[in-house]
Image (cartoon, rainbow, N blue to C red; front, side, top):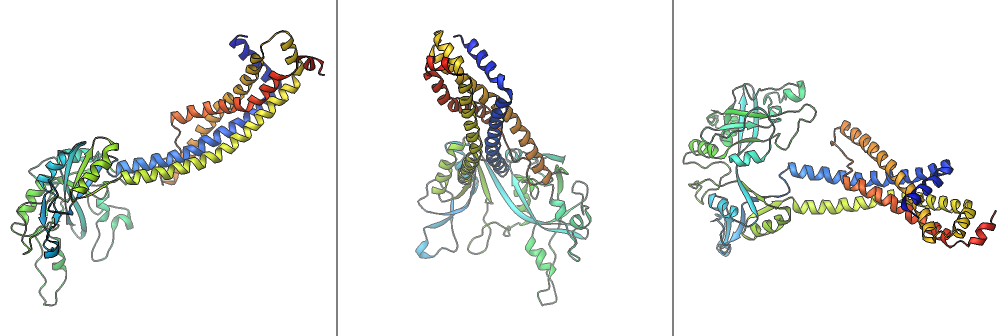
Length: 463
């Protein structure tokens, strides 16, 4: 029997009993939709988590900060800690300077290295103040790697003149120190226009706070000098989703920041920088951290462990990613198991339908055998009918899954918690169709074997 004839006969036999066939297919539809939607929820959670991690520094970035090593750490740049005792004289503070950056850049599997210099400043505008702003100095390449969506202005690429680029939530932090009024949160308006208003920046935060309070002598400390720093740009602010990983950050060119700090704190200790045992500053500035970009995610852990062996502190998202993926794999298995119960019920329905079909077509099977039809063709005909049921149910169930997934995502997006929760990748759609067909054929295997082994004479005499 030709394959086309086999498929045509199978399809014709199914639709002779439309109502029963439709009910059986409906069971497969519900089962397929259940298992696809359940698995899509686990995949959606995992996808959302990976996107968040990517926004917070990426999956292939190792953040390196100073640590405590020993004198035998090869290739490391170190300074003996001023607090070291004679019993621990070999313990050294591993600082990050240009030599350390070059060493990290020369490591295997490292694509690029971005040093970061961070300093806290205070900004004033009229009666309003923002008394805790973290300014991060980065190289031109480091700024571009942030992938910031610029709203107004441009990124601060000038390495001569210091310019600030503000995150889109910085303006919301200005308040009146006398009334503790935050205009943005209480009136819904910004206290300052970062692009057009002139801000006064105070780099010496300790001197500022000392000038605000009387030490008891009746003569408060003199206020620190204020500087006007040009605004390079402001991050784009979306009304629907105004927050981003850069919202509360201020960025500038690292070379311009170095030059400014050295000029302002000439021969004085720079806040956040280490000092000698006598309280004097070092000649060079040390970086707050260094972002090391690894070529592939599989090499992140190796690079991180090597950096730690040098005595530095090193952190990456890879360990959290592995732990999170294991948790989501368990969630997906559990949700998939719940959906599989519905598909199992559908498989029982297919078996029942095929058994009823055999009982109703016993004489037809007997005639086919008497006429010399190959028994394997008889079995294939019933398997094809079961596969038809599985395929049609799988297609309709997959379409229903996409509909349910769209509704879930719209509901989640409307709540504002996350953009999407359900995610159906192409491989899941294809696997669900194949699985539905296989389930149909497995469910129809026993009835097809019964049809194949049916006695021709007994089948013909059957009424």
